[in-house]
Length: 131
Image (cartoon, rainbow, N blue to C red; front, top):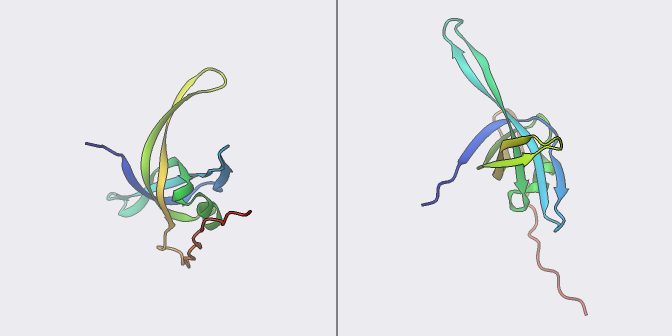
């Protein structure tokens, strides 16, 4: 049985999505999503902001890495679905660190406070061989 950590987060993009390419030419987009829980304070009789979760997100080729960078910007409200991944590394000064990141499977603009017009990308067809 396979266990996956699929989650859906709704929040604002906290930094400009950055596009890079691996040495093999695979596009990768990185950004941070800020998701703030709203909690009702019964004593005050009002809604208040709870703690903000900042989570690093990575969108690879099929998750639309290039589309993320072209469609969403810092401050955009987004709905992101993906898998939680844990990654460990050693910093330059020798300290060991572990981070939890979201590997994006699907992403889209939230239409709760905005209007969007989807434009379908043309399919890429194989290029004919040249003689």
